[in-house]
Length: 273
Image 1 (cartoon, rainbow, N blue to C red):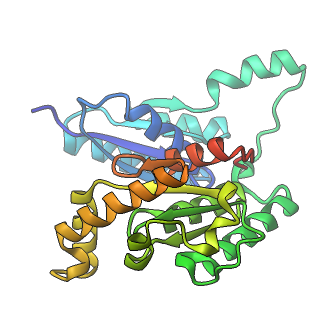
Image 2: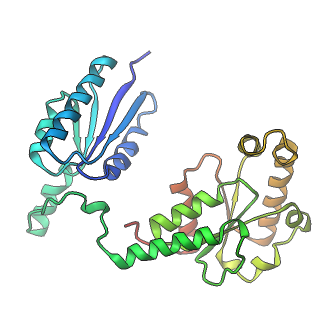
Image 3: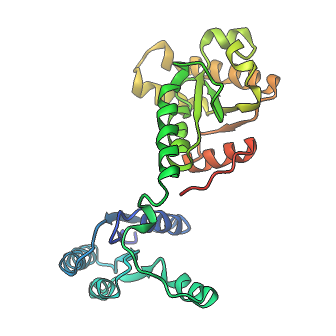
């Protein structure tokens, strides 16, 4: 069996950019095993030397060359990191030169700019959206007049994490409503949702996966029984189809994919940053 390849996401800031891009790249190589680590705030030469030693040691222990996905903007820090002997992948390098040539300007290397608070209005919109998502979680506050969208699904199908992601990443005011056994028995959308039909999006999930999730929350309860999960998912899917509500399975979809598909279907266009 091939050795596990050490991967480091190194940055002079949070490391979010390096990790996001690096993870997207690594998923293209399903036949290789990786163990990854983020090294944020490597913003001095001393820190870069310590990071280089750590990377070198990981490669020695694993017996393979480490991979470094790097978003440091200081060339001297990059030179020191390269002394680790790792494969260096600079996430900015392929784009800076063509952009400088096209724009007629050289870049201003600034640490942490990608994830800093550049636009305070946008920042506050995201915070307000987060507060909205928490206040309207699981049907606690069923006033949806200010909602951008409402996720509808049985309990533990992925509504809350998706709403939180939509709020933090896109500033979307996302509410969610859990379909109760009473709602499912009625075979119609709950009255509180009917007037907001244009904001609705349904989530579904494989019953076996739902059973596993519920078992972790309430082991051996009726709520977690496989038969209960099968019945609730079938009833929810039948209701949503009958009511003409678009739905998506969360079984194998990431939160990012779910959020993108929901926004696309409902025609919500928001920048990520």
